[in-house]
Length: 393
Image 1 (cartoon, rainbow, N blue to C red):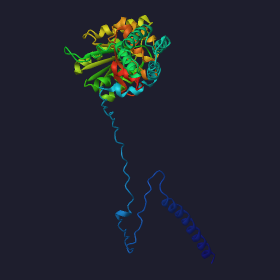
Image 2 (tube, one colour):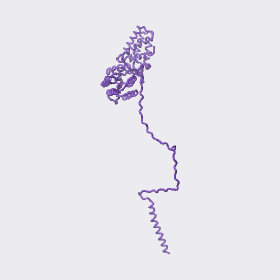
Image 3 (tube, rainbow, N blue to C red):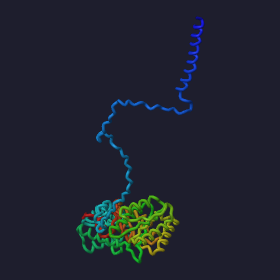
Image 4 (cartoon, helix red, strand yellow):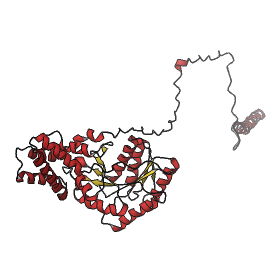
């Protein structure tokens, strides 16, 4: 019996040992080897399960397709080419702009001349009125003496008669026979060349642009030369005026030699076959000898292409008699051929036109009567006097 019990105990011990050896091996076999690749078992598929049916998606159920649009390349819009109004009769159309000067001539002079009797006091009052309008002392004395003689000889009594005689004397003082045409026509295979000079602040660059419009309105083709290289804004301003009327502008870098830019402008004008080259120069103070000499250099360099046909001096009418000294000095340097009187609408001293012509013998060819682009008019003595006197009688 004891043998049986011992055998059973031995058997149990053997079985337990065997189990202890087998179970750890099975566990190690279930774990993936370190550093190895894990093999995923393919999931079982229930072959009896019905297939999944996906319903078709209708077009209206699809989300909208978003397409990123590339911005269109910017197109530079060219400014619309303007067509300046004709210059014929422009001064008559602008006569209302002379209202301030009309107060001096129309209401001042004519109120005296319409008196029943013109005594010495009346004639002195007439002289004072003309002098205050910047006609000038010498010109005033001549005009008054001639008018007194006509009134005495003709026995004029009515205001209308005296007004007519005054208008004739003022027109005669403006020397209507002077040549006021602008010499801008091409000749000898090159364009007409116009230089524009003047002091700082006279509105020179703006007037250059307006002169270009005057020429284009009268049928000329124009090219601008921006020889005012000391002010970058001047070249920009002139180029803008050119763009408005389809005129090319030749310019150089800021601080470039003005004579070189002017020379290149005329050369370009010859190449393109334009009618007229308008050269804007830097504003010069007439008491700066070096700057005035430089202006003379500009003219000499330009004349390597041929003579300068027209040299216009821009004068500010509001400067009065000071403008006469400016004109005299510029004439000595560059031989001014004509005067453009600007800002005439902003002064009561319209008589400066008479003073300029009598003192210098240089014709006023254009007058500025406003800030608009076409407020520059060819000067017509008779029409100007009628505008100054107005409708008073």
